Amino acid sequence: KISLKAINAYDDPGFVPLELSFSDAENLLNRANVEADNATISRSEHALLSLEDGKWYLENRTSKLATSLVLTRKHELESGDIVILGDRVFEVRF
Image 1 (tube, rainbow, N blue to C red):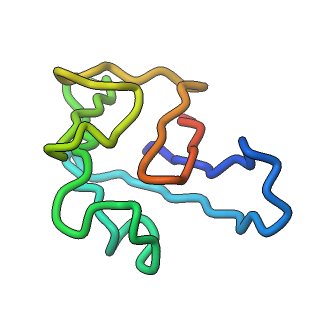
Image 2: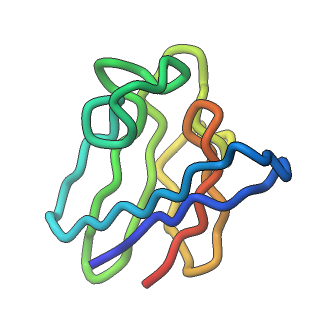
């Protein structure tokens, strides 16, 4: 199981807390399963979160490279990594 917890990186007084949990081996991240009303997150495919041999990886799926870490290939995630999807900043936890 892995979770992405939104953090208030911009000291936004209107910040809305959000925590997402995933346990499937492959999780396609998009607007529908991250934050339905957030137009900065891709409607179709934003990123792929996958579990392989006990390690979590993140892979960009947008043509605009809108997933940060700026990913040009699959990346092994570590607890504490910061991931940006659209205008949301998440801390990886497991």
